[in-house]
Image (tube, rainbow, N blue to C red; front, top):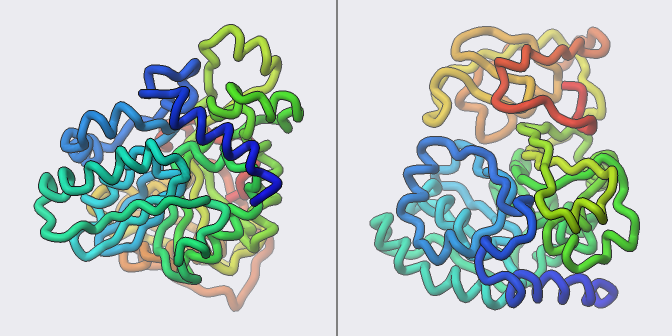
Length: 353
């Protein structure tokens, strides 16, 4: 960590001292969040205003099917997403927030009791740990101990993203899910811009080039990730726009699983039926930006998609027919029409399926 202390200090200062609330941001990048699902909007009404005011994020990285699960939020900040997750996992579940900024941790910790009372929980099911997302082991987070890892516009702030993803896949249980929103770039950020304190703090300087992100995931053994949603970001501050020139920035919500997958979509003749039993998605299950499984309708799937549906916590909600004993070549993965998916199709970088 020693070689990255300067960058971490700059980020900590920006979010702890420069910014008092999200109204102090120069751009809307760190608060460009996607539309929240109706159940989450209802929970948000119970979140303390001070927690909401100090929240910074660029998406809504809260997947379904969380009851009783252990969820880890990287860069939990004021705790907004952690408290939403606390309600969703319920008394039998657990939420761990990790952040390095004392001012943000103080806000989150001061409001634990408030939210437990609001949710009617006898005991807290959420805790906030002070530390670095690059070093979860020092916080006592064990191998294969977490069902879901989430993060909301934070990984871009890390000076050592390779370590972040290595730690994520270390702590995830087999079949566990990474589900996060962040800012990505359509090219590599030049070093002078990557080191600019304002661009870094505004979630632009550290944005990953989408192809480098794919390579990082492959380096930790994740050969197939899925883009759930994609929004092109408008830079509203003239000085920031002048600095960044022709770089295109996107807010992506991404999911990936700790599974033994292939680096291409392969055809084994498998078919998936969604049973309509995920409470938040009774009529259709959205896996990614071009996989919408309508309830009861059979849909051919590649081997990787079949594994995502049958070897994760989503398995009880799908009937997957077939196995991988007979191979038919590459899977012909054609995206569904744009109207069938929740947001625009993604920038290049995901698997073909």
